[in-house]
Structures are given as structure tokens and as C-alpha cells.
Figure (cartoon, rainbow, N blue to C red):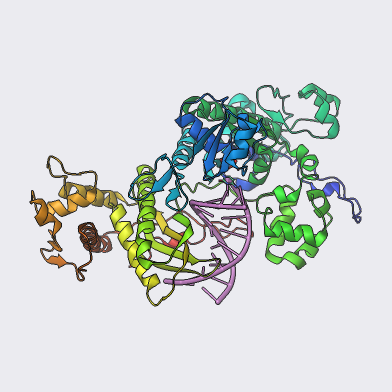
Length: 614
DNA sequence: AATGAAACT
DNA sequence: GGAGTTTCATT
Ligand SMILES: Nc1ccn([C@H]2C[C@H](O)[C@@H](COP(=O)(O)OP(=O)(O)OP(=O)(O)O)O2)c(=O)n1
């Protein structure tokens, strides 16, 4: 089947040819190929989204029954509302007071917060936005647990974390495996096939969609009819092999979601379709705790009446601009705009918008787990900082968060390291200043090391400034990279380092803090005083004494210890860098193909920057 | 390197 | 609509 015959282009009418690739011919070659990527006619993509995520996390943490109406509170407002609570008409951004009015036995949990002096977030009484900082750590951790269940359940599925509670899964491979397993005759090209491997597959079987989720209807009539193949047959619909693929994808997703539910207690909603965009869009067709399947032939009916501002990337200014420019709201209305016309008005963006509207999305599901990411902790200050000295406090809180997060991240990828640290400070609305610096390559990224670096940046930021009125502080790691190949040496580095500095067996050593190790290792079993007054150390490798260049009188012991720890780490990094330079060169990343069409999610561009500096 | 915008949860 | 993230484009 090829595209429908061309019909004349008319104004104000959407053409059936707008959706012209819904039933591509599928051949043996297709099913036997491994790497067709976005051009695979049997591609199956899923988007899985956790229901009322923050609320679910708190519900699980508190071991509450899933039916209790629970809500996550942030100051006086709500940021997540469980489905049971939604039954009472409660919505996000209701005030907690109103919510309680609507549902007197509502369970309200305030988000965990960091507060002054505490290294870890907690659930405190009397939280206050002026003194506390919201912590999303629980949700991040639960999120990564869910991702791990995905990975473990679908060893062959490519997984891309899309947000704290969403992930795309490329099911194409596992689906094809099952397809061939279940229909082994597809694996061999018949002798009498007219075009050999390029012959079309034989007719597909009927599908029993029971238990597989909700089918998004093909037509208004289909909407009211029973969801089975028989009725489809009667209405003239014929199943495709891609439908079969989708149904297998749905099976897999049902399994995965069941695992998440069993292992972790979270319900999820998923969308299953031929590409990311459609998977995402149809995931919200029915929630909670459900999954929806969008067959290719259902795309036009589903997409045309869709308000396009619901589409990812069209939810913001671009969507507004489109709506305003053409004075329309739904996808169908935009189909009348020619590509040329759109390119004229929207340049760069035009092509992929044009394609999106037609259900085309060429983006791959790419595993980007932790790679290529930055890590930012920030705090808006309702009560602005006016004294530069007060910056320290918040920087320390942010540093604590970053330390925790990096530690968590390294549990999965131990060789993760941030190349730079950057501090932003915003005054009022607009006018933000930032300052960045290289971050030492070290395993022991402690609160102190981060805070010290942050404070240094803060000072640079604050100097040559008379009046300050900081309303927002942000501390971030950027250029976080994982050493992948040829990294035995880095593992080695970490190991030797630990071996060289084993925790000394001192009864009440706070051995949790690697900082202690370093200091102590230079002066075994020293009296506390002595340790605390050190301002230099002797390097075991080069036997020189390395001293702090600048010891400030106003430093307290903690600050001094931090400074020393950082100095030591910098010095060790220096040695490590030398070692590296002498060793065979580590990374050469995977191929980066030049193919890429303009897309909103550009292909990885500069992976080659890896280790490029000497 | 610094700043800012945009999009999203 | 608040708070927090992340990425990208521009300067
Ligand atoms: N404007 C927003 C949107 C979301 N979130 C947070 C709270 C949500 O729990 C989490 C996930 O966002 P979703 O948009 O996926 O919404 P929910 O998971 O809460 O509900 P749903 O079941 O509709 O996905 O992100 C937020 O803080 N602010």
C-alpha cells in the first residue's frame, strides 16, 4: 500500500495526504534488520509516566494505603495531588487550606527540606521558605529506582529518562525478538518470494487487545464499538504487522509496569506508538494506572482535533506564536499551512513543527542516563541577602545537596566527575551574575570541597559590588562526564588512592567523612589539636611539603580543614593528570553521524570534547 | 566564560 | 503559580 492518491490541495481543508505513511510496506528485510532506527517501520516507542509522582513517593515512604487522599505541600501550596485526592476536586496550586476544606481527612505531607546546619534533608516542623530549601532528593532516588526496574525488566530496551517521572523506552528490539519468536515463519524469506528479502510479509494475524491497554480509536465509529479485531474487520480495518508490534510492545509495557508496581508500589501510565512524540502524547489518553496504544491508522483522528499547545515543545512561546499567527488552536487547523509558508515565518523550527503536526518525529530514544548533564541546586530567596557574608550559609546548603546528589549518581556510575562548578546569583528580576571555575578531579567530593569552591566564586562575584540584594542563588556542576573506556586506570586511581589512605582505626573517627582520612593519613593518630591546626601537608609521592598559600585569620577550623583538603586533592589531581598524560589515551566515543535533520533534540554534538584538554 | 531564554515538571 | 532543573543560543 502506498500513499493515497493525490487530491487537489484546497484551502481550509486538511488533506488525507497529510498523513501518508501510516501503512508502509513491511518486508522481510525490515524485520530482519537490526539498526533501522527511526526508519524502522516496526518501531515501537513507549513513554512511561508515574502517576502523581511526588504524592506517590510520599505515600510509599509513609507506607500508606494507595487509596488515601494524599497531597504534597510546598509552603502553603500544593505541588502534587494523588488521584484519590483529585476526586475531591483538589488540584495543584490549590492552597493547602482550600484543599483541606474540600477533603477534611486529607493527608498533607510537606516536601522534605534542607535547613540550616543539617547535612541531609528532612521532614521538619515549622518549615519556612525563608530558612529552608526544598529537597527533591527522595523523588530523584525513587525515579532512578523506577528506571532501574525498567532496565532490569527490559535488558534490550533503550531507555531515556525524560524527566523526574518520565522515561522513553525504545521497545523495537525486544518486540522484534518476540515477533520472530512467535511468528518464526517471518525469519526466513520464502523460496517463492517474488522480490526475495524485499517481498512484503504475509498477512498479519488478528490481535487480541484484551489486557493490553486502551486502544485509541481509529474513527468516531470505532470509538463506540467494542475493542476487538472482529469489529475492525467488519468496519473494513485491516491489521498491520506494526499493529502486531505495538501489541507486543504493549505486552512488554504491561509487564514492566507491573514490575514497578510490585517492586516499588508506583502506578504508572504509558503511551505506546511509533515514535516519541506520539508515545508521549497518547500516554495521557487515560490515567492513572493505564496504558494507551496509538496505531498508525489512528493518528489522524487523534491528532487533528488535538490542541497543539499540548504537544511537547509547543507548550511555550512557540506554540503561542503559532496560535497567534494563524489564529487557530488545534493541529488540524495548522495542516493547511504549507511548509514554505511556515518556514517563512518560523525559519529553523518550521520543519520539525510541520512534521510533528503530521505525526512524524525523527528523534531517537537515546540513553543519556547521567551523561551529558549538569547538576544544579538552587534557592530563591524571599528574603534577599544584603550582606555578602550571608551568602555562605546558602552556599553551604546547596553544596550539601550537590554532594549528596553526586554521591548518589556515583553509586551508579562511579567515575562520574564534574568538570566545572558554577555559581549564579540573581538580583531582583533579571540581572543575574555568574562565575565558574574548574572543579578538581577527585573522588572525594565532600560538602566542604564544594562549599569552599562555591564560596570562592561567591567572593569573586561579590567583590567590586557595593550594594547587594540577592534574590536567588544557584550552585551547579556542569560538564559532568563518565569515564568509560580504558578506565581501568581510573578505577585504579580510585582504588590505589583509597588503599593508600585507608581509614585509620581511630575509635571515634568520623570516618564517614573522607576529609578526615586525608588529614589523618598525614599525621597518624595525632592529637586533635595538632590535626586541626595543620596548614600544610607532605605529599607521599613527591615528598614535598605543600602549604596553603593564603591562611586567613578569620577562618574557623572547619574552613581551614576544608581548604587543606582541597589543596591536597588538587595536588593529587596534579599527579593524576601527569599519570594520565603518560598513559595511553582513554576515550574515543561512539560514532557521531552527520545525518541529523534539524531537530529539537539534536544528536550528540561534541562528545569529542572528552578529555580533549591536556 | 558569562548571560539569558525557553521549556518543562 | 512556586520552586527547581536542564538545555541551548547568544554574546
Ligand atoms: N508545574 C509542575 C508540574 C509538576 N511538578 C512535579 C510534581 C509532580 O508530581 C511531578 C511530575 O509531574 P507530572 O506533570 O507528571 O504530574 P503528576 O505526576 O503529578 O501527575 P500525572 O499523574 O498527571 O502525571 O513533577 C511540579 O513541581 N510543578
